[in-house]
Figure (tube, rainbow over the protein chains, first blue to last red):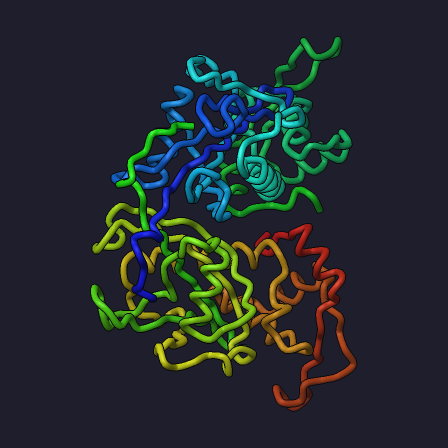
Length: 229
Length: 229
């Protein structure tokens, strides 16, 4: 350990939250309009500064709650960004957190006073500072996560159609998937229970409903799998 | 973005490096004896403070080089640790980096003036502050890495026996693997080229030598696989 440092080396630590949302159709990102200089009026991730008495985890929860009203959202630490001039005002290091939530389930919590708004990932505006880089890294992590472990338990209704599950994967991976390949792949993981019920809205013949086999799902979360190969 | 902060919220940022080593036999960790208070004389990860003009990546490289002499070691950012009282002297947040290197290849670089020393993972002493937690997280990340992507290219000699490769996996995963299962598993990934040469030191009949098929190896690094299932 090198023990020499000067007080000048102290820095501000920020926390930025990358909140992905799924609305059963597409992948969205929650952004907030910045209401102070610099970059006033531009779009930003949900962020703020770490306080002396907080851990980063606690700061992330406080900041997210304060700016959006969201509660009980499990965020995972993503990466710490440290380019020297990333904030033009003052040296600030930022630790990014990310989460993927079901938009419908948290929609009532979202308070509008800070003008936080969901954007379709493909149509998100340019962000301040290095926030585009953060978003990019989080998107990659999310895709990697979805290709190595099951995803969907907290994002789909309890009973869902194969098409809804495919939509979720397509939204996260940002690519169209072949229907038959997708079904074979998902079935090979053995995490679904096919129900006797059908969803009759989707077509005249209806589509079978599925639910996750929670035990097998959790087994695969800890074991991992490979969605791509 | 919340823009209110006080100068008191500024913190020291440290970088701690978790350097794993492989010597064709076991997995080791590089530790250094701390030569100042608090916790003088105890074992610590290789660490130091971020300077104002550095990114975290650059600081990690400088600190590692200064305390060990190591050069050109690619470290990956692991996680940022922020428990409020993790350093008893002053609020310090630490970003941990990790790397896995071939000990023999870097042994000449290692300078002894700071008493950095390799320890077998299983026999490592208790570390200062939250460094045991850091080491634990890095070990888990390394295991996960080894179970989802090929590993070994930089850690084994260019030509190696199946037994040497199995030793590497056993060292990282910290478990004995069944020889036949291991061979089948590795062969199923199709990343090895079996050579006509034999290593005659290992047994009377000798053991065939292998090398990695670099193209297929790199393909699997980006695609990923699942070693466990």
